[in-house]
Image (cartoon, rainbow, N blue to C red; front, side, top):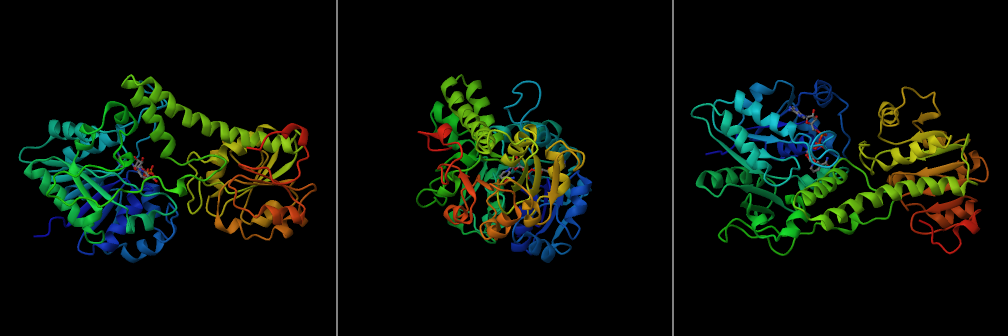
Length: 466
Ligand code: NAD
């Protein structure tokens, strides 16, 4: 018997889209329908130009779309037909009320549970994929139970997503581990096996960790409970039963790739998840733990501001009416996502100081950059370019905000020749060859060290830069 024939995923975003594409590619025997209430997004998934950029994603979508991968705004029929439903909607930081500015807002997750209960007339497996605090699965169970139609039952599983934007396809094809939490009842185990069966189409069994939804928490003392309320932060989860496959060795979670010096981290997840840790720690009266995590946020804000200030200081303490090229606007390379991008912070700082900005990013759309900078058009000191050399032309400085690989190999001599002198480079990602740039004639400033001869030596004496 095939445990799962049809899957419906609510949420066609950075997680739902790539996850379901890789799933459809590897499971030709399963029909996957991704639904979203955002019509524009669904239209884009059904068009030539996908709503998100991820290396390798377009090829997969083109291969599977219309065969066993569908994108639709018609949620009810897709939910009704599905054997298994993924919830992968956004869980943003609350902007009002209790926990404002820190707690995760679970209203979208809850509305999915309500919709499922309303439309479904046979039993389903509901899989929580969004990043949520522990015990959220219980809330989904409660909402479903209170609204379930007669004869219908639900098994709720927790299956947090670990993909990173920019490498989503590769992360999904070759995951370090797949975590599946469920109830310890017979029905719960059956549901876990069904989801596990789906993953085993392309993931080896030793990487699939099955567990009771609550078990890891029982094993954690209070302090670490506050530090690790998300399954995605648990380094070595405890499998559900010794009979079930145990993962061998420990699972790498903190890789050196996460520890690069930069102008600051961004992205939709890290900031909101840490803010939520602050909130949960405070709710548990763990004041020192909350202060620790708040400090992580504060240091990131400080890093972004400091970079902007350093640009101004290095350019003789004024950038009013100066032209500055910003190379890179996405929060990291290989994505067009600008959510919480440090480039926004830096650009706003430079605009406030009166600079004119020439912005170039290989993947971010012009409209998105203007929206992020609260601008209606390009008139107010901003011009957006589709060519990096055009962006650099006539400027006083280049500011690297994203670590795009192509930035490393640009012809900087050509840029230098077209710029005003002295020409500056501010490398916010520490990716360029600074001695080569200095030889060309650039004044170079970067993160973590001071490379070139400073025009403001007295200001920087005794320091080592940012
Ligand atoms: P996203 O904003 O890109 O996508 C969420 C989608 O859900 C949106 O298109 C929205 O229209 C849709 N949606 C919201 N409520 C809905 C509803 N009631 N009915 C139908 N559609 C609805 O978000 P994302 O980046 O894909 O993140 C989703 C979840 O996954 C979040 O909890 C996030 O923390 C987590 N996560 C994200 C990443 C990442 O790298 N982006 C990685 C791991 C986990």
